[in-house]
Image (tube, rainbow, N blue to C red):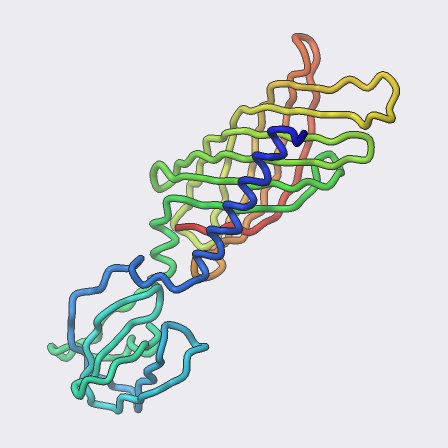
Length: 257
């Protein structure tokens, strides 16, 4: 029979993969359409594509001095309509030099990064070492405020002489959350299980409470993806008088929505 901790790790892994696949598909309803406004092209031309991405072909070019209207936004791509009714998608960088009806430049910030700053839910997976043994870890986090969040983690370690599973819930502090590179600190409690190989003589399974403290860093990569690395110290309370300390280093990838 599959242990509950293994089933939980597999379920979380399936959820991460499923949501990642969903995040990779176009989701036009996810972004609200901006208020319609006219902009005048000041570059020699404006390339209009059939979809919001560089992989879509250019099907029309708006010339200098033409007017276009913004109809919809998807991350850093804008759907625009020309005066003669042609529609297409234009990247933000091509619109930064356009002029409004008042003859001034319209501000276009990096909206993909804005989405990152406003994220609420983050899911991810990582690979690392737990006491020099290979470890697979999954996490799911929720931001309570700009710099404070909670995160649940499930991990599995496959050692030479035993197998270990653990889970914990952390309170996380991210003091520079408005930066592309952002350090964070975390601490929490959970559970630790170690099952020795059956070939070992007098092997006794361990089921103990777990405390952990972590320091790590996030790097906003692109679109909805974030690189992450963390270093953790785990303390397993084996009984009233004895505890074990373990150190772990993890690197991974997460996505947010």
